[in-house]
Image (cartoon, rainbow, N blue to C red; front, side, top):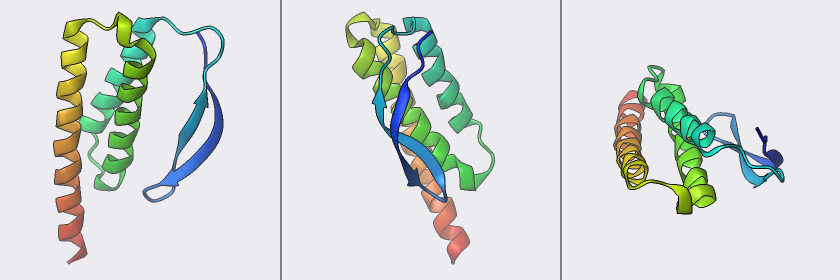
Length: 107
């Protein structure tokens, strides 16, 4: 399994750090591992109960999905593409709900 080397980091939402540039190792990880990663991060975002962590979890899931599409587009099945599109749509809703919740707490 290859592990990406992170060449730079950026801070988003309350000190959460994410990679902004990733250099891929010469060997690529098997597609199922990349698929499992985006699914796991998506599930973590959906089931996050701490409102302060939802935004970071959503961002991590979106990055994982978009990275998987970019790296493996030719090998993705129609079903997986549909799953990723549904996941991105659900993450958009989750992000909007989280923003509403956070805005309500600020009042």
